[in-house]
Length: 260
Image (cartoon, rainbow, N blue to C red):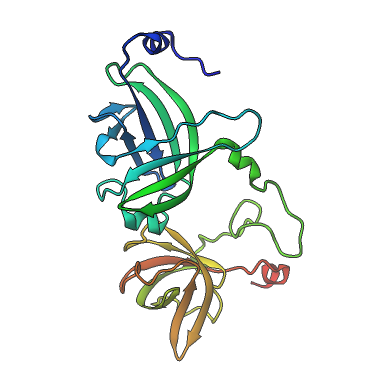
């Protein structure tokens, strides 16, 4: 059972209350947004909670034990806060959402009800539905090492210890054209041989995808042109002139680790 501050508890127990719900959303890129179902903006902890978002959430009891519980929040797609393009680009994937119960007449009286991460987001009728997954969902992730034929480390992480930031291991690529849903023609990788960036990453520096990181599934040269096959659809979101930091790739074979 959650225990509230005595003043807040007394307010809740009173005959008349001034309660609302606030949601604080922190994206993986550090962008922080605030929303509330109150009819006026509220400010606490340095965050402004916007009443124009149409945010509302379902109420569910917390489950005991390690079972994962989920909540849905609904909201209006507002270009000033949450835009359709940003959802489609994945900028809200895995964002952390804090749900607060607040006395809007005395903002000191508030309580953090739960902290979740955004799971699936769907669009409908000019709005969205976001599934919030409880912290116990993290327990379903694989931790430690997995022993298998291919390497289970991520290129450049603490287990791999390969320096992807060394000058020889990345290049700044510039998009020339989007030739298909997942295919880009680029410049900037002229000194890399065919397949060198396959299974690598492209960290977008400019354009609509700026701040996002995509997997390079394949890097190949055809008729003198350089192509990157991207794991995410980029046809509508990458335009000529957009730049991205491309790292060398690793196919997770031990022979590659030793030779490349």
